[in-house]
Length: 224
Image (cartoon, rainbow, N blue to C red; front, side, top):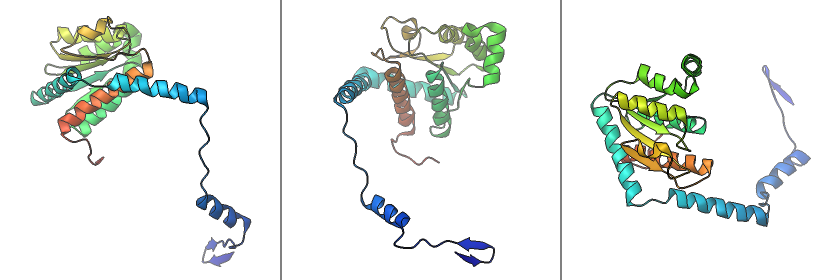
């Protein structure tokens, strides 16, 4: 060890065990463990389900294109895109709102503030808090994007009803059963044919990110 001013430097001998182990590990990375047959079977099936859920046809292309047109119309008339959801769908809503505003230059928001949620749920009940958030914050020209994996969340359905009374454009994303009540309530409706929450949520995010990138006109661009 040598002292340089108030700093100390340490030298590790070239033949030390530490140096040897670092050198060895950098030259010989650990090989991947073999995948258990039951894990491989599960993941083959799982990825196959995701591929089927995210497979696109002209109908999906048309809905994504219609979403883009709706968002651009919203921006042109001075409105905002409002994303709403519960749980994982709320996380997706927050992500989409950020990317819509920052990357696509389409003003957007989501109701993720804990104080707002607890206040409105306490005053009006959990089934109605999003509807009241829409009532208090939405304005003419806005668009509501309602996300519910099951399509049966009462607070999402009530929010859509509130948006309709305010004459907002509505886009819905649902999954699970084909007859879920949210599926036909929007001007543009997306439905994922899957019973897996994670696959439904992943597909919702993929389709909406595709719509955002279609607004931008590029699939690759710098983060800033």
